[in-house]
Length: 335
Ligand SMILES: [Cu+2]
View 1 (cartoon, rainbow, N blue to C red):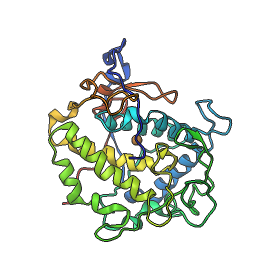
View 2: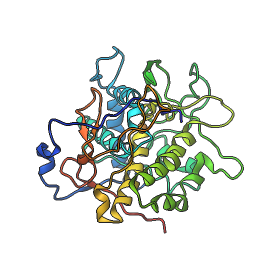
View 3: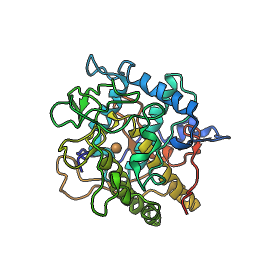
């Protein structure tokens, strides 16, 4: 897939075992509930959007480029680490941590709420009608018209991010307008590939009883389908921001990954033993991606975060009720 490239995430030999993480030893007495965008109040949505716009204007932490913003840091970091964070077990804890780093950035912009999620399972019948596309209380709609160069899809013309100019394409400096290219469905395909994330399709993903089996089905199925459904339509021949490795360019990325994280949480809730269920293998080295697979993953593996945030340890991102996460989601609600 387009947003996959490669380096090797070494099994961490950490000098500091996670038990020394003071935050993790404190307790989480009342976890906060992360909400679906469509069920949040208008005030909550507007507060989130105001902070998300603020992130697109705050100075970069990475000092990579004079025009970079804090939002660009997220896209750059995700693109830089692309190989290390996709297509193996680490995909879920890494993105859980990444969404948390973004939630903290929202807080630095004055936001008091939690991260939210786009419930694309609820919207799968026609995802183009979702509340997330609202021009006032959402992220704006599909790209339209011209005004973008190179391989960029048409720019988003409405909503709070219509003036946002993402700096990067993958890790290259290539400032452009935020863009989307919805797949409108054809044949048996629903709009935005919704047939790949219906309640039925996602139940089948959740039915896998092994961690890495579940992760693989979720990542390659519903997760990828939403990325491609929003950004790769037919006809235009150009891709939107939600597909390349710089996919956090589209602020909707964080709501999409909120839902991915929620589905992992739902899968974990089905059995107590799943809170720390983590298995599978590291990828082959990025220098030889077709080579033999790497060693088994462990809960002590590191979660690299570049210069955006301190590196994490998988063990600390398994339980959303740990002190430094301390949140929950609504349970499965589609039967
Ligand atoms: Cu990703």
